[in-house]
Length: 136
Image 1: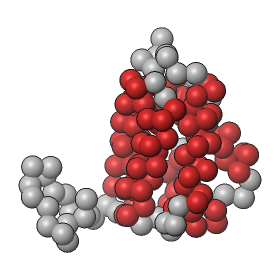
Image 2 (image 1 turned 90 degrees about the horizontal axis):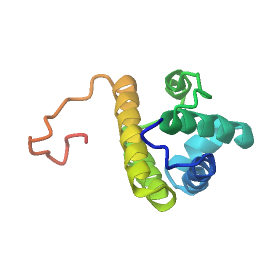
Image 3 (image 1 turned 135 degrees about the vertical axis):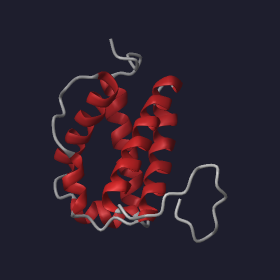
């Protein structure tokens, strides 16, 4: 039994739909998604399978998302906005403990993708004060 068993497939599908509805309208993320995705129904089905696997362990998603994202014009700043929109949708739609789990997995994924896309960013210990010029 998954640690997020309280979530339903319908809630996961709603999470994905609400997130992308907002991301597509976002001034920064919208152009990235809208230029990259041709068939939105197909894309939403894939991402729903991804989150179903991540939250329920359904094993419906067996792909590799990172290589797809390498080709996109993603900036460092996009990660914060992506996480903010995802967090907002998750907290709105999912039960609190499941939202916490989903957000944690999204944060891990964003950190991994950012490290893969920008491998030479300086690493700043979390306890170190950040200057305005230090990337988050």
